[in-house]
Image (cartoon, rainbow, N blue to C red):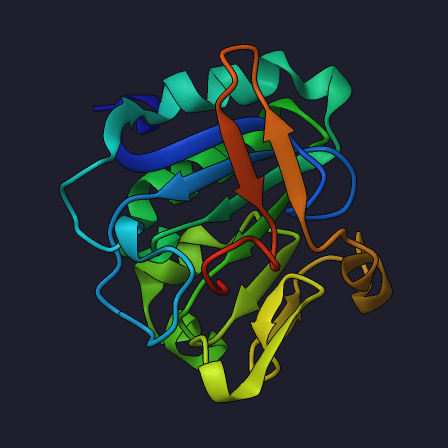
Length: 193
């Protein structure tokens, strides 16, 4: 099986968002998270099976790359993206090889946990920024892509600074043609990431 054929359990994809990193971004929410941080904004993404869908890495990468001319980058969030390290690694490698899109990964794993695990380390090898650490409701921050102040910016390239992340809008409301409403960002209704 090639990297592009790897199945990937997803909760949702938003093809254009301004509240999930600098610039306009393609956003992928993974399905599945065993960390279960109290107060998490996305508890519906925690079950491994459930409301999500399964797609291949190639399908998701193709969709992101098709819109690359209008995007600054891609943000991976969840659920917990690093509980599916093989598809995340293949996706990020494909983007890096075929585009100038940036990659931001939001994870509940700490930097030390990522560096201690070869699969998780490979998953973030092509990321520009990893925002790492468990969400802690007592340290609620909800800005700069950090739900709580204990979450660490791990700048893997020089593409962004903490100021770039601090400038990201905290809430985005999108109304689709079918009148469905999507809230995303750190101040979305219901809690925090």
